[in-house]
Structure formats: C-alpha cells, structure tokens
Amino acid sequence: MVFKKSALIRWLTYLIFLMTLALLVYQQFDDSFEVDERALFVLGIGSALVLLGFLSIVFTFSKVVVTEQGLRFYRWYGAKMIHFTDITEVGHTRFFGGQLLVKGARRSAWVSIDYVGTAELVKLLCEKIGEDRCFKASKALNKRRQELEGLN
Image 1 (cartoon, one colour):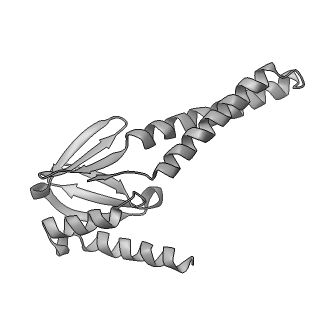
Image 2 (cartoon, helix red, strand yellow; image 1 turned 180 degrees about the vertical axis):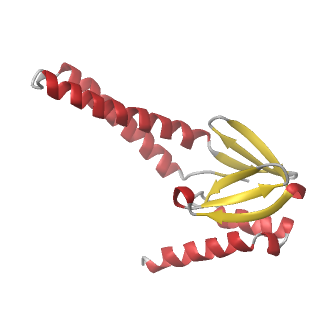
Image 3 (cartoon, rainbow, N blue to C red; image 1 turned 45 degrees about the vertical axis):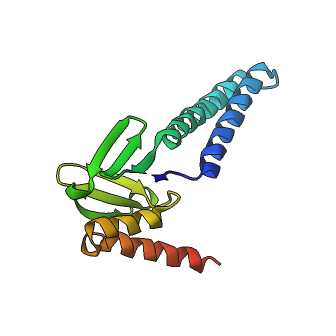
C-alpha cells in the first residue's frame, strides 16, 4: 500500500509553478514595465517560483509505503524504514496542519493526516501494534473526520 498526497494537489502545484514561470518569462519581454517595477516584480515572482518548485519536489517524492516488515517513509531528502516491531506509539501533532507521528525505538517519522488513505493506515497500524499504541492517532483521525463532516 502506498500513501501520498492526492494527485489533484500535486498537479495543481505543478500547474501553478508553470503558470508563474510563464508569467516571469512574459514579463521579461514586456516593455510596459518601468525598471523599478520590473525588479520588484521579478523578486516577487522569483520567490514564488522557488517556493512552488520546492513544494513540487516535496509533493512528488513524499510518500509512505507499507511493506510486510513495516513502514518505509520516502521524502525528498531520502528514505527511512520503521519496522512494526520497533513502533512504540503512533501519536498526533498539529504541526503543518496535522501529522501522525510514528515513533520507533530509535527513529520517528511524520505522516500527513491529509494523505489519501490515512484512515486505512491507522487501522492497519492498530491491527499490527495494538489499539493502545494507536489511541492518539485514532482520536485525532476521528476529530478530523467530525470537522470535515461539519462542513457539509
């Protein structure tokens, strides 16, 4: 099983990145800008390009793969593995809009609560390591579900 951001979020990030790049290129050939305006515009659009480029890379490479032995976390800077036998707790933090914190004996990793299939991941972890170790994650997931149902 593979868990990652939805394709819509990833493709919207790519699309906005390309639109911003096109705007920067168009501005370079447009003579209606003054020199001071051009420098400020290039600085703003350049900053947006750097941020969107980084987000595109992060969203492309960030995922969680469930194997028979444990969880493999892929990030833009590398990968790490936490075996099911090493997991001591699955908690929750509100950092970055909500993350599940998988704590192992020697390492820990974050899983975005907005990944597609997060509920299935928590259910699988509860089966593998026990309900008592996943209580905080289950509680956070139920709270998130209630918040989303309240939007209807």
